[in-house]
Picture 1: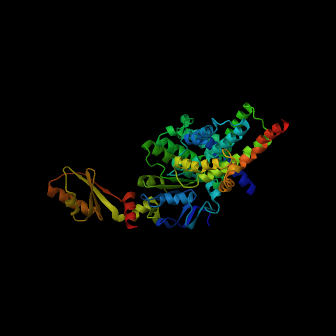
Picture 2 (picture 1 turned 45 degrees about the vertical axis):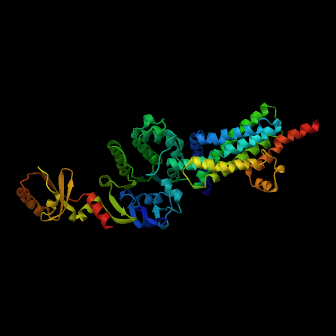
Picture 3 (picture 1 turned 90 degrees about the horizontal axis):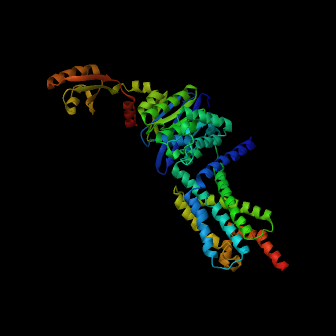
Length: 309
Length: 224
């Protein structure tokens, strides 16, 4: 086992009755890496993170966190982790401060240290003034920030985040993303699950795409885009409504889709199709208002891979 | 190394105790099923019967210890499952036994603390204690045993509904009170009742109280 890897997973499998939630997946996450685990709903993301964080036991396969086996040395692995689970909450009948003290105590952080860290974290996340309030009065964004504080109170070596920005407003999302980057900047590892392509694109060094419990691919966001050169497109808008069906018949257009007031045309050779589009506009006596050629987005790649898998 | 591990886990169980005290001691089902229901059950049985104080206080103490020590435990796991805090707890570096120990200790402290009140009430109405040490030891042993029993009650059926668990646990707790010598002396029970009473933890606490409480009655009778 190499010490370069923070997470090593081999043939990890989990069944729920007849359903195979995670199907013999294998991957590694390097130390200091920000690793994204991307997939649609019910793809197996949360089941994987729950196995890695010791909440449920895998049926098959092995996994180690910072060289400790998750089954044989569960307490040691948990001691090194910070966790923001998707299906978990802070104690709403306790204050923000008492929630942090509880988690600090459960991780064996000495009293003075946990008090200092709790004050620092609450200030960084803008919750210090509300530290004595019961969490039941907190908004969803505040609760999520508190969960992140709770995950950081033990100064973990690796942070597991399950959909950390799901359902949050833009400001809270930005704050949490900044904190994740800051944590990662100090050489610490982040394992992030999300179904938000843009978030994965902005944050992650590498992404694994999982669907139906199997990993479709693992690569960097940019390389994933380059690998899908067949997903180039032209986005065009006209001064009058134009039939999408008619546009899809233009030579070189593989598929046409209406996106708001624009039409997106999936093509292999944008240069050839641009000339044909100008001819099409003349023949229909419509004016082109705007026209852009676009490379594949991570979302396009994701959808293609998910469809293929 | 192993000793450090066990000591560390033991210390962390007290973090669970603190959390449970702050959250669950004041929960409605705990107050209702742990204090009010047994109190009124006791009153309905004793009012109108001309019972000596020496017989009343051990019964009240037995009921109090049993119901209070078994009222917190069954509420915790379903409550945490419903509030989605259980998963956060399980993902912490604590063993499942540390969580159980914390839950048992919080039930135990609640039972032991509330059990002091019937003892004070007894002293107030003139019931003397022959051996306070034996009585204290009995309360500690009994409430700890009842607290462990309460965790078993929360195990089945697996549910995230605290009210369901409290009601189902009451279905077990109430019959036990009637066959454990509190309301009906065990000698007066039929043979099958005596057999069942031997598996009730409450029977042994009722028996135990003969030492600190009934001893004084025997002394008083022999003196007269």
